[in-house]
Length: 201
Image (cartoon, rainbow, N blue to C red; front, side):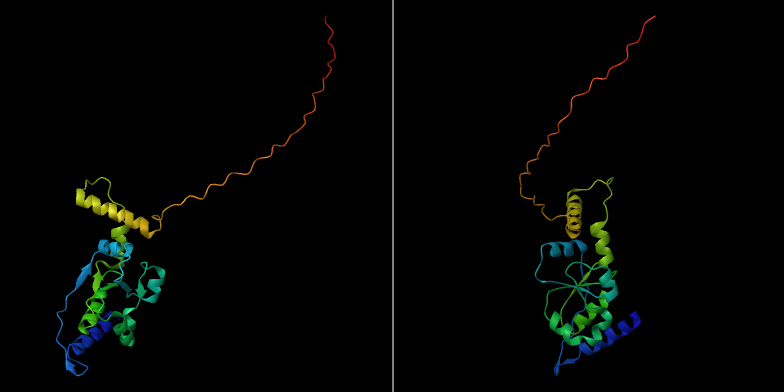
C-alpha cells in the first residue's frame, strides 16, 4: 500500500510542477521541515491559532489514539479529496502532519509542496515520538544542566496538561454542616443482685 501511495505522490509531484490553470508553475524547492514534540506541545498548550494538526493515519488508528485537536485525513484517501485538501490547506502556515513515526508524513508533505498548496511541518518522530518525548519518566540519577532541567520541567508540565491534571482545582463553596441531633437515651438503674450469703466454717 505504501508503494502505491509513494508512486501516486511522485506522479502528482511531477504533474504539479508543470502547468496549473494554463500558466507555467515554478518548481518548488522541496524540503522537509520538522517540528519537535516539545514545540508542538507548546503550540497546543498555548492554543496557537495558526496550528492545524493533521493526523494522516488510518481512521482506526486515529480512533484508538490521537493528539488533542488533530484532524484525521488518512493519506490513502488524499487522491479522492484533492479539492478538500486544497481548500483546507492553501496558503496556511501552521500545518503539521503527523503519522506513527514521521515516515509517511513525508509523502503528504511532498504532495502539499508539489502542488503549491503549503509548506507543512512534519511531527519529528511522529505520534510515537511525541508520546515517548512528553510522557517518558526522566532518569532521576542523571544530573541536568539548566537548559535540560528547564526542558524536563516543561515536559512534565505538558504531560500533566495532556492528561488533565493541570486544571486548577477550585474548592467547593463552604457550607456549614447541618446540626447533629443528639438522641437522648434513658438508662434504667441497675438492679441490685442479691447474693446468697455464704456460711463460714
